[in-house]
Amino acid sequence: MKATFFNELKEELKKGASDKGHPFRYCTLATVGLDNIARLRTIVLRKATEDLMLTFFTDKRSKKVVHIKENQKVSLLFYHPEKLMQIRIEGLAVVNNDIKSKKLLWDSIPEASRKDYTTSEAPGKEIKDPDVIEYLKDEDHFCIVEIHPFKIEYLKLKRPNHIRVRYSKNKTDWEGDFLVP
Image (cartoon, rainbow, N blue to C red; front, top):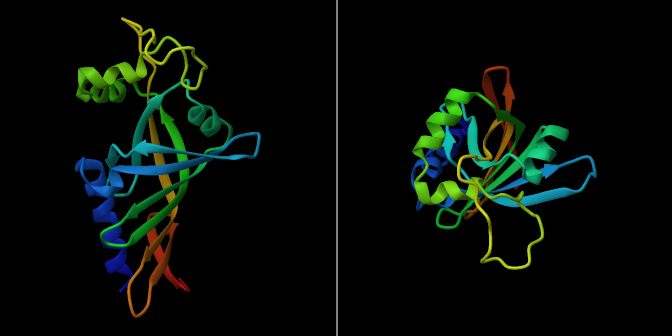
């Protein structure tokens, strides 16, 4: 029975990465840097592999990258309102600096979306006018972040009983335990 729920969450994560209309396309990423304050932000899930490595893109100058370099442990939160399903993931985030991977993924990004990674100022810098942002012509700050989960919690809100399962990675396999919802 635990395997059924694991397969369901896995399929939903893969759909979130490939289907732009899927509720798991956008999720909340939490990081904690040296200041020990949890920082949350919405990210776009770009890829979910068979072994559940999750990928998103960002500007390499962003605070989330700074936090990941200070503390690789991150959390993700997904919610599917129609299925009343919540997935919480804890994992280790790694910045992928492989030039071939970066070029392949960069080339797959629509031209209009590439500008998000080419601002002359870093994300979060204070500006006077949001309509006056300078973009770089021959330079980008595109960054790939991969999350390698080590714990996943599945929660399904249903009657007569909610279902909650914690999965923990044990080397290459996942072991599940039912929890009180």
